[in-house]
Amino acid sequence: MMDMDSLEYGIVNYSTPFYVFDTDELTKRVKQFREITHKRADLCFAMKANPFLVGPMAAMTDRIEVCSMGEFRICQEAQIPVQKLVISGVLKKKEDFWQILNTCGGGCLCSIESLSQMEQAAEWARKNRRKVSVLLRLTSGNQFGMDKDLVQNLMQARELFSHVNIRGIHYFSGTRKKIEKICRELEQLDAFLLEAEEKTGCKAEELEYGPGLFAACFEGEEDRAAQELAAICEKISAMRWKGKVTLEMGRAFTASCGYYLTGVRDIKKNNGVNYCIVDGGIHQLQYDGQIRGMFRPGIRISPEHENEPARKWTVCGSLCTANDILIQNVTLQGLRQGNVLIFENAGAYSAMEGMALFLSHELPKIALYSQAEGWKLIRREKPTYEWNMAKEVGNENFDKYFNGH
Image (cartoon, rainbow, N blue to C red; front, top):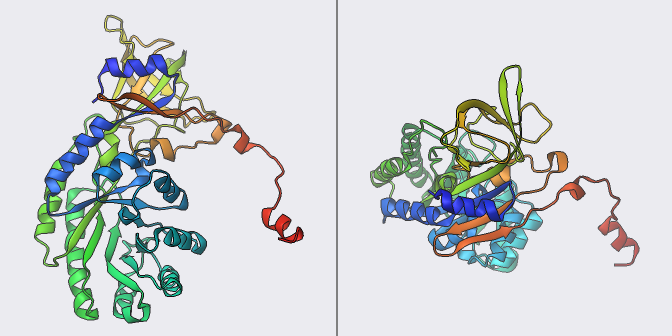
């Protein structure tokens, strides 16, 4: 956890709102998970949780899960080896999918979500005379992946896809799950992998599994990720199917390393309720499970006023919607205009999931911090108003056609 002296350095040097990600905490977390999973499972980082951390995470984990063309370009810019990439995502446009395969030379691993995606991979492989390695995604009962019968049919008909190497199965059913459900899923996957081998004669070499580990964010929640990960590894060791297991996680890695800092710009009292208006809002701060600020995340105030009276406050953001409540009925000591509120455990999804374009507010600055390297600004504040303006643009394909190209 970052100390107040380090956080106040950022407050003095950067205007709010902004995020800071503590890479020391991130490294500590990954090392802890590595010690628990040693020789029983590899680690994959789902970069959607925080693409700003993909560089250090690529150095510390075995794989990076990529779910869009934009995420793939981020990996290219970060010079991440293609062998570390697993190309996932419920939708893969053929032109994007083939561009990725062309760039990687077939060296990446691909998660197959449908029969048409399997056909796209096979067509590219035939045309380029290159092998494509894939994982068949088994659905958990929603729009993602394929049902049990189709997965087994593809395994059985593998000779029809001669240039496609079916390496195994990919499975993910959701996040913040209880350990009992995770253990049941591993038992079901164990039975499925054995059944699939018996029916199809095709042995899956590996299983990529997203456990959806619970990440503690709110007051009263216990950080039990390490204990639950140990229980998962025990369950993996007990599986009758024997193959390589990779655990794919995002929130569990990054939630604890992030802080969101937002300045108090106005205070007032309406109908007996103390309101604090900050320069951020729910478009920039997202906690999984939060409902209109009902749950209290870790929160600190800078500067601290220990000798002043404490009051109950409702903290609201700068959006013109009654839903913009960061936290309700929270006791804060000596809160005044000009203070900065520091929200903890904001390292996963907050910087990506919010309504970034609503009201054309600027995108906040983002910084990295470590004791060895200090503060490093990795994104300046970015205006968004131009993206919300009506501005006539040419049709590129139309112009090229009529200009003889």
